[in-house]
Image (cartoon, rainbow, N blue to C red; front, side, top):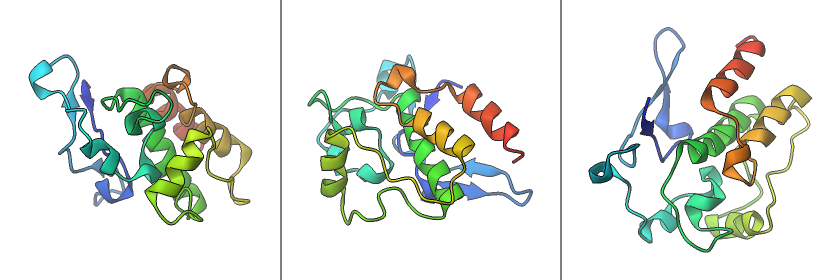
Length: 150
């Protein structure tokens, strides 16, 4: 409940025998409120793949790398939802994190594929809100997904 994953991307989501998603690789996870377990804001954060990261975690916008938060995990979840629904990774036309970072610095989002319905795209766009406080809570995302009939 108080865990920020900090590295949410498709390779860290496994499916169990019953078809339920399970998160793995909690190497960058933090326990909110425990200063001894807080993620370090080192330059290593900039080495992480921008394709799945919230702009603020990469230092885009403020110029300073910030620790992952619940809201940055929501941004990353939007990227994973994009992949699941469209079959393509976000920024598929970009070859590296540098190219993606340039787009993010212009407050751009990945191009909408034709096969994403409005209801799905609206959720993804909310997850990708530039201002982290405008992103939905995890319970709201779950409710939307349940309404999709998944």
